[in-house]
Image 1 (cartoon, rainbow, N blue to C red):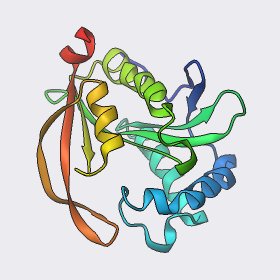
Image 2: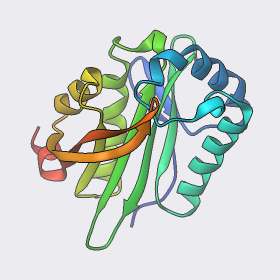
Image 3: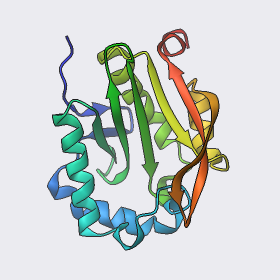
Amino acid sequence: MFRFSSPKLLAKDLYLRPPLRRDKREWLQLRYASLEHLQNWEPDYGKEFASSASFNLYFRHIKNLLADKRGEGWLIFNSSDNAMIGSITLSNMRFGSVQAADIGYWVGAGYAGHGKMSEALPLVLSRVFEHYNLRRLNAASLPENKPSRHILKKFGFELEGTARQYLHINGAYRDHHIYALLAETYFTD
């Protein structure tokens, strides 16, 4: 049986680790600096987007996912300077007959388009399919979010359909494309 934990995950130029309380200041700075960039892709948080309360909610959410055996979460850091660059979260993990989870991710505005998610995502895919032996990983993306669609397709996620009015983003309920990566695709690519 697998061990439910959030270990530090290492890649060539970056690493992922679970959030710590001491990350609050840097997380807030990165979120605040990325407000204009992220508000187009993320659910509406209003004035809570880059507040101390928002970090506390995020931190508790990740801790609760792990404690309830429903997911894991990591912050992404550059190895060269230990700068925080984003986050990846596995949530809604289901076992038994379902064997699936959902994934969400973001990178700060200054790091978008530099291949950071292409380096980070395989570390989490390995956790999903090799450590937890799940059969399916789901992701949702706005149709116009070309970078997100690109990364999903790059790693073998396939478009399965559209969830109408899925999330409230930037002032309106927005349709999302729903993608899935199956274990058989992960292990054959």
